[in-house]
Image (cartoon, rainbow, N blue to C red; front, side, top):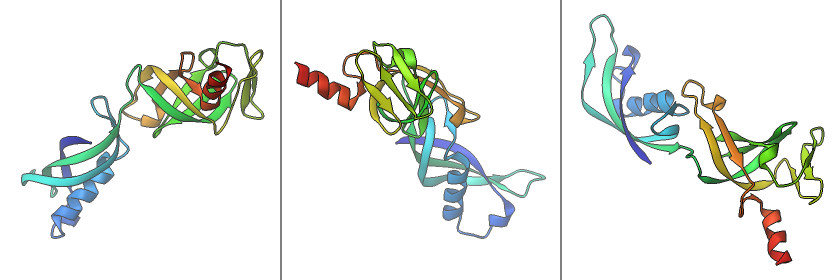
Length: 180
């Protein structure tokens, strides 16, 4: 949770209603689902508190109110190890859900083996190791590139690798333990 401060615009049609409820509604509508470089993607805004008196600007009947609120955020960090679920297999790799965002694992970053990709069946397999990866598989990977898009968070680009010890599909790690 992150404590945030900002100013909201309360339109004239809400004047006369419960300002606590109105402030909470406007904060949630305004900030949830948005991205900022400092805090990441804001998932939930709650515990909204109005700070001081609101201001009315000449020519605008709305109230401009300073607010403080708690925000649950998701901010991916470089080199962070994350768990994800494969959601798509394409010619150049696999996409996976990591929290509320999707990330790409390029085919060169999946395993130390040549990969045969079957886009039609949404799966891939190592030529020699026979390790496979398909939609729905749970994986662990490290974030190696991040390009967050504040204007459209769904367009953010996150690159992952699974070519390090302890990373990859859970099943692969279990097989490695059994071999030892």
